[in-house]
Image (cartoon, one colour):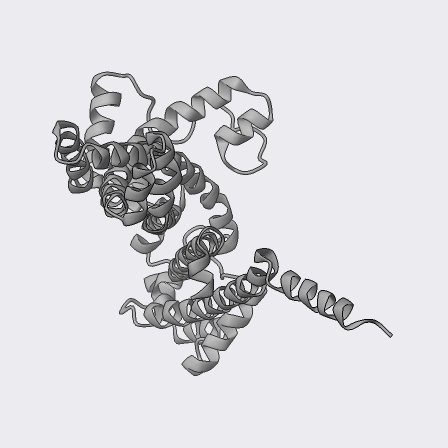
Length: 365
């Protein structure tokens, strides 16, 4: 028979193991992630409903856009087209047919290119992703750095100057800036290459990711890498100016709020080095609102910047959406709308996961 003291020790040890931080937080984190994933899946389903309904509310006729004026005037051709596309069935049935096609990866066929919409989007998305990654990395470095300087130099000359820069960045229309920069640096100064992702005489590197700079590095083609990077600079600068201005304002505000917190004052009163206070307390405390803005900005960039891509003939999601909308290519428009919705949902899901990892209060709450 075990003694009462050994039984008490075993119970105490089991209690300590159950209350260790890793074990105590494991279940709240898993529950938090499960809830976020479930909500995201419901939102994706809602996006399919919204995309289907809004596309069907468009006053333009998809039959005329697909068949043309002459063919759409023939009742037999129209009836055959409706039967082939399922347009002769009730809207509810059409939606479930559309949903079934989505589960099979079928987004329809583009009226303009006659290619599967999924194929067209698969070709366009890497171009937008390359531009978005370039812009968001540069914007985080500039926006967070300048926002930190502005907050630490509150109401001084550096703060006033950085605030003016951020105000210009978020106020200048992006489409106007794109045209102006393209005209000055390409037509007037000849410092930058023309539109597109590569020079007309250049050959794209072997496709691995679809992002020319990455694929050129993987293939060991420095000339192609430099060419792709030079074409990336102008549209990247246009989008970076706005995104950096946005991040400066939000990071400055978030950091100022944390600087006034009691635990920061206590850290300073203890005599901790200024660098440790800034990076260990201030930046960590202001991370949550900054992550929110970064996630929204990155989702917007991944969704395609229509006018910038059109000005620079970038060949991404934005340019594809512009051409599809002007040609009344409804399957392509629906595909772009679905991709944009999924991109925003996926981006917010990643940000929520990061919240739960870096801030225990979020997952417990």
